[in-house]
Structures are given as structure tokens and as C-alpha cells.
Image (cartoon, rainbow, N blue to C red; front, side, top):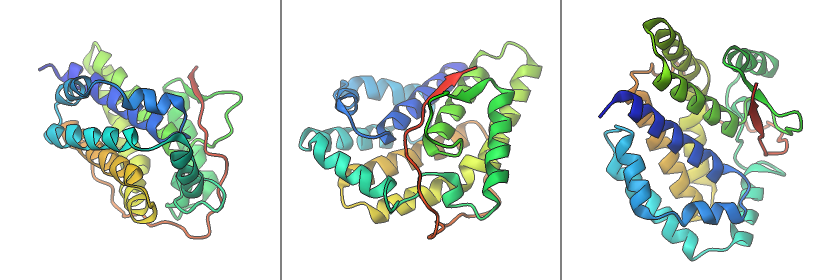
Length: 231
């Protein structure tokens, strides 16, 4: 299968995960009610070696949601990501560098590829959903690159964003989420996110981060809704 098709499917899967990490709504259940065969096709098209594991995790996530309700998921989401922030969902909640420098560097990536926060966005650029959506954008651009120069430039950007930002803290975030949540829904979502990103890193030959992040216990939270629009 064409690598370009693989990268488009990888982007679609990242966008699905970003939506599932957003505050629960009726849309969440609509997404989870998609036919399992559709998810199987999406996972298979990613070219990720552990695609069968992704399918299994999604099916478990879907089955759990069928026996859950919006109030339960919303209450857990609030506990995890808002208020006291039991599980930080921003890069600056894990990376021990100057927060301003982190945000400035991420903003530089976003500007370079025409990706920006919406004017009414209430979250910072280092929110996980924003970073996942940006990585998805780079995968789409990589799949559509029609010459060696643009392909190399986009791949280098994805590799740098993996090594300097998303890849540095996504594993620590998933570990923290798994160990903090009391709902199997978020444990499954954590596993699905980690295995998906690991598969994308391998499939696109992206570098592993040089350091391992840990949650910063005194990080204060902010509203966890991320709205982005292309420039």
C-alpha cells in the first residue's frame, strides 16, 4: 500500500484520538458508534505494524462507552484535566523547561506550516490536542508532497516536533493517565494513544526523544478546550 495512503490514515487516526480526548459530548458517543469495520479499515490503512492491537483497543473502548453515560465521562474528564488537574494535558506540565520558551518554540512550528489557534481558543499551544492536530497536519502535508524538497522539509519538521515536543512527553502523559483514572474508558484511550503514536514514529522513521519526561506536580491547569483553524 502507498506510503501516502498510510500517512493520511495515520492523520485521521490522530484526529479521532484528539476528538476523544476533548471534553465528552454527544459527539463523543457518535464517534464511538462508528462501525468497527470502519475502524479496522482505518487502522489497516495506517501501515502500522500493531494495527490489530489498535483495532482491539478501539473495540474495547467502544464497548465500554456503550455501557457508560455522558455524565460519568464528563465527571472523570473534569477530575483528570480541569480543576486540580490530576493529570496534566499540556506539555509544560511534564517538561522542565521555561514555559515561555516551550510555547514560543511550538508557536514557531505552527506559524511555519500555517497552523494557528482560533481567535476564541482558551488553551495554550502546548495542549495535547493541539499538538496531535498539528502532527496530523504534517502527516497530511507529507502525504501530499509532490517533490523531494517539500517532502524532506515536512519530514524534518515532523521529526523535530517528535524529538523536541510531542515525543518527549506523550509516553509520560499516557502513563500518568493510566495510573490516575478510575475509568477503564480513559485507560483504554491512553493505551490506544500510546500505541498509535509509537506506530507512527516507527512507520515514519522518526527519532526517539533524548530525555524522558515526568509530570510536574505543581503545574497549574487552565481550561482544556483547544480550537484550531488553518491560517
